Image (cartoon, rainbow, N blue to C red; front, side, top):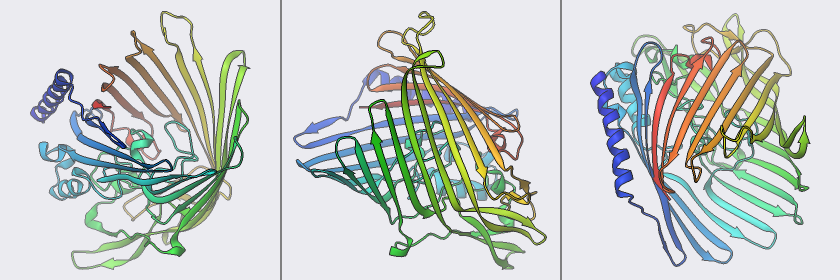
Amino acid sequence: MKRVVKILLIVSVVSFLLLVEHQISFALQYGNWELGGFLRHESSLKVGDDTVEPIWFENILQLEIAHHLTDSIDLFLMTRGYYDAVYDAKDGGFLREHRVRKDLRDKYGLHRKDTQADAIREAYIDIFLEDFDIRIGKQQIVWGKTEGFKMLDIINPTDYRHFLQDDFEDSRITLWSARIDYALGLNNLLELVIVPDVEPNLAPPYGHPFTFRVTRETHPSTVIFREEHKKWKFKNIEWGLRWGQNFGDFDYTLNYFYHWSDNPYVKFKGLDFSNGVRAILFNDYKRTHSIGGSFSKNFTKFLGLKHVVLRGESVLRLEDVGSRMTKMGAEPIRTDNFNYALAIDHTFYRPYRLWPSGLSVTFQFFQSIILDYEHDYINGALSTQIDPVEIDEVENMLTLSFMSNYLPGEILKTWLLVSYGDDNEWWVNPELTYELTEKTKVILGAHIYSGHAEGLIGQMSKNDNIFLQIKFGI
C-alpha cells in the first residue's frame, strides 16, 4: 500500500512540473468558432481511521466548443474525457473485494452517462429574441446560491461520488431541458423550465468510501437492486416557474417546481432464491411540489458593519418521500417539510498586514422542519441488517467560510469552510490555491469529518482526506 501511495504522489508531482514547464494551451479562436477547456488532475488520500490509502486518482480533459451562428443564435458543446486510475493502481483497502472492485470500476473508472463524468457534459442552443432568451439542450439550471449545502438548487440532481466535496458546478448531473426567460422591462424576469429528462441523485454503491450508511450496511450478497428510470413521456415531464425582480440593492425570486423526488424510496418487491435468499429492491419515484423563493439585500451598514449582504432562500416540499418504521419493517410515507437558509456576507480589511486584499467572511444558517412529524419517522432502511435511526423534527446546520488573497496579483488564495450540525457534527475544509499563471492553478486541501455514525456528516467520520488538484486551461 505504501508503494502505491508513493507512486501516486510521484505522478502528481511530475504532472505538476510538466504543466509548469511547458505551458501547453489548446485555446483557439477562428472566426465565429471558439475552442477552450482544461486538463485537470486530482489525487486524494484517505488519512482517517488510522489508515493512509488513495481513494481517487482522477484525470479530466474537458473541451468546450462554441459557435456564433447568427446574431441571435449560439451553439455550445462541452465534452469530457474521464479516467480514474485508482481502480488500476490499487488492490487493497476499499477495493479488497473483487466484486466491489469490478462494480466500482464499471461505475466510476471511466466516463458514464448521467453522472458528472458524462462524455457529453453540456450541449445546447441559445436563441436571443427581443424579450426572450431561450436555451434548449443538455444544461445546468441554477436557482440556489447557498454554499456547501443545497437549498433552492433543486433542478439538477447531484452526483455524490465525493460526498459534498465537489463544487456544485461539477457535482450537478446535467439534464436535457429547456429554459425560457422572458424579460418584462429592465428589472423583471419570468422563467419557464421544462425537463423531460428525469434522473435521481447518484449515491455511491456498496464498497465506495463515500457510500451512505444505509447502503454501506447492506451487503450486496443479501439484496438485488433493480434500478428503474422514468421514460421520456409527456406525463413524466418536470416543469417549473421562477419570477424575479431587481430593485438595485434588493432582489428577490419566487419559485415553483413540479418534479419527481431526487431521492426515490427503495421499495421491497420480493425474494430471489437463485443464489441463497436475497431481497429484490427497486426505486419508487414519487411526484413532489417544491415552492420557494430567495432574496438578497445590500446594506451600507448592518449590525455595526459597513457594506454587508444579507441573503436568504427557502423551499416548501409537499408530498416529499420519507420512511417510517412499523411492525413489518420500514414503509414509504409522504411528508411535508420546510427548509430555509439565511446568510451574511462581509469583507474585513483590517488589520491590513493579515489580509491585504481583504478577508471575505460568509456565515450561513440552515434549518429543516418536518411539518407533519411523527416519532416513528426514520432514516430509511433497506433490510433487517440495518438498525433504523429516528430522525429529528428539526435539523440545524451552521457554516462559516473565510477567503482571502495574498501576494501581488492575488495569485495565492486561502479558503476555510467550517460546518457544524446538530449532535456535534463537524466538517472542516481548508484549501490553499496558488495560481502560477492565468492558465495554471494548483490547489492543496483537506476534508475533516466528525460526528455520530448516523448523522449526515458523521457517517463520513472515517473518510478524512487530503487532496492535490492541478488544473490547466484557459
